[in-house]
Image (cartoon, rainbow, N blue to C red; front, side, top):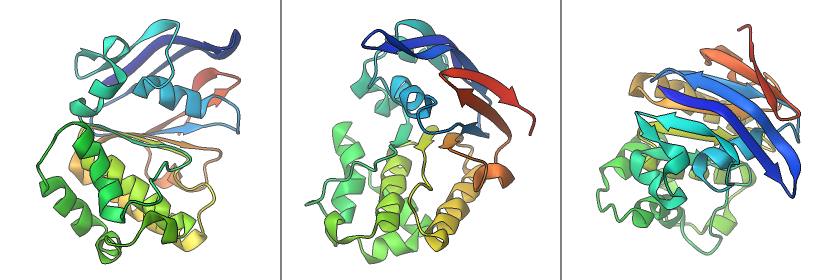
Length: 215
């Protein structure tokens, strides 16, 4: 079980997240729907420890993430696809994917092999520099990087934003296939366009406040 309880976050004294609570059962996919500026990215970053919370708790597999340093969260099998991809332009595709393993001093390449089997197109341009890829291809690489480290929990922030329809559909195919991997997934979107068919439940976020939607 992944749980967020009464989380509050302000930036420069401006309230961004207000008493946010949600829970996701292990192995399920949960949607987070909200307009730009509603607080989706701030919630994702607070879960990853990039933004420090003021009050509240974050629990995952009996671990207190709110008391865990940001760089230690990847060691718990948490993968993160940020909205802006955050690829290193001069690194190859494979080097970008491996960054999350290098950060945790993990030498096991079996997860990389699994990602290539899951997304063969990634393997075909593994030696290309990230800067040569289209925006949609970069999203696939960012998803692959998140999957390499995220063997327990996956946080996907606006994975379909700015992606051509054909690649958005491919991203959705990959995410749908994760249901068989027993991964816990939180996926944010500005609307219900792509993820409606795969999520087990959905939360709506508006002005930093969250509510459970009928699915």
